[in-house]
Length: 184
Image (cartoon, rainbow, N blue to C red; front, side):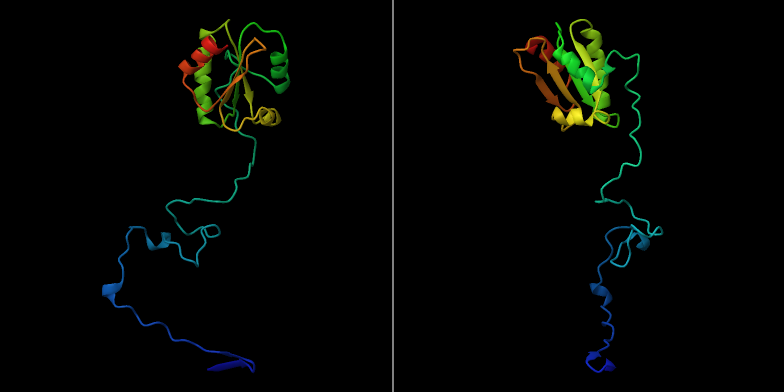
């Protein structure tokens, strides 16, 4: 027993006896020993630890603006509008239904929906008005319109007595046709 201070005594222990080899479990995976994490290693701070994958629970920071989507171009029939332009369209006189697509350039289902909306715009060229709102730029408007998932579509009838129809997520083009033909 080694005394370091008159009031405290520390005792040193000998290492545990070696476990016989017949009870030592064999490794299940074929990962190299350098890939196995122990409580002494931290994959966040050391670069020499090779892990097969990492599931980070840390929040992601937005380092730059999202990339501009290639699916919204000037020559497309479905035009990107601002929140003010959308509000003017809704309040103004229309004789065709208005379809508003809330999307983001980084959203995979939004890109698929953009292709379907372009086909729909060709079909309903003079019988419906289809527009887009980028939620990254018009986030306050999207929040006010209660957009919680992308893509979100609003179908607004020219008849002010009819309620707007809201869909969330990727929907088939036939469902959009049915809403325009039967509900508007």
